[in-house]
Image (tube, rainbow, N blue to C red; front, side, top):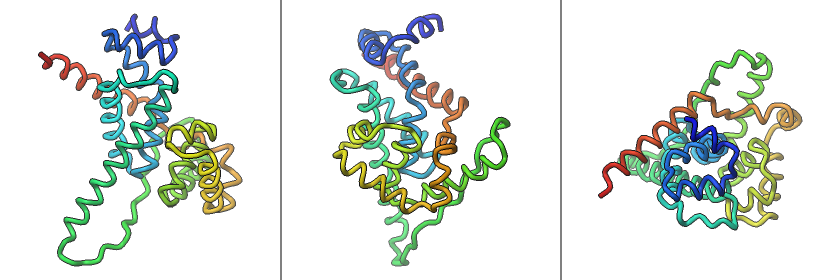
Length: 228
């Protein structure tokens, strides 16, 4: 723990360098710094909290395994975002394939209507803000995939246009266009309130953070132990 506290002021690039040098435990710092964004990106693609956590773990493991491929000319957060998007899209493709095979009896599937997931209890959130946040989350979930993930990164996560473009491997104009269309699709009343409540949606709470970090570190340590 003392080592983590002492390294907390290091930049991402400095932490990566030390992890590469063998200080595996410091990878926890990177996970805790970026858990919220990684979660929001994964959830934007999958619209499922449990699957989002699974994707987070795999994305972190992929990042750790290929840490030597991280090019320092890019931000670590951007590199990690791309890994997360790739993993989430792969998970979604597998889910669609499995769903198609399970309905091979010829029945036509309609689009699945997902239930709203209740917000975790938060005594600091006012009742009205909680209700509005739930409506907002539902509205965002209803956006088409290509618009939802851009909206999530720009309006919910607060990334700039250039950061979003880099993370999704898009041009900046494409990001601007998709963001505009996403806003148009959302109800006007919700859109007017985004500035005050959007940052409170899709929160990655401490219990989830601890769960993901512990699971990833356990898998990393187990793999290192089993390595020849």
